[in-house]
Length: 300
Ligand code: 13P
Ligand code: SF4
Image 1 (cartoon, rainbow, N blue to C red):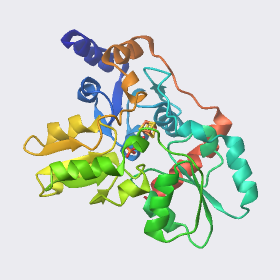
Image 2: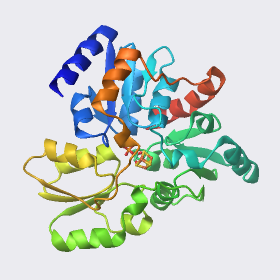
Image 3: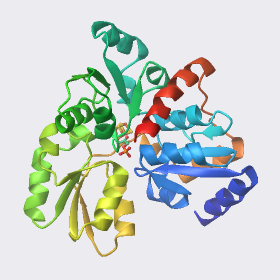
């Protein structure tokens, strides 16, 4: 492993590359990253970086968002099969149908969508800023795609009327209210933090509902010594590493996103060697999609 890491560091310099990784990546990939974050943090970094090459260790929509923001850079995903099943639940045609059925409504799309869907969107959001984005849109009905749970969470927080699409994250769906209750019985003093992609009956049992980087901040800044984490299990490694004196318990061991785990150190090295797989978005779609991402960055 040492050898691979050394080669990755050398090639990174040679290519003027930066490695961006999502909080759900496997530990070795988290450790080799220049920046580790949630979808919002990663897209901000992708927009700001001076590097020529971005190796994106995450799922396809994340790399695509980087490619939309930085068309002059080479954006690579080390495994092109690393997709997001939720993002694939809605296509452009379905969104156009929803727009026809709800004339005058604004479209808010979770960043977990394809570039084509973003190109038909008024404003994007992530789990970190969904409430803020929905709040900022005045006096118009809102079509929210694809995550019905994040959409319901934002609707409940803002009191807005929202037309929700029936999408969901199959990984977060695995976290059940009884998992939280059992964990709470075992660790009664632990604070419960869950991701807004969780089911509504799970969200109701939480002390905090935040994005993955929101979890990182919450654990660091909260006085509690124990935490029950309701999201994909990969983040537990980072939380434990950054808070060695605190106890971190995953709410469910089976909440594993196989797509996130497709990226390995070997594939990161290969990606830098071969400059593969490049993620590109057709210019006409990119320009339209960019507007919805820029609008998001402008609001929150
Ligand atoms: P975050 O933006 O909170 O990291 O979430 C991304 C994601 O895909 C969660 O499943
Ligand atoms: Fe998509 Fe869910 Fe995996 Fe996040 S955890 S990338 S929403 S399938």
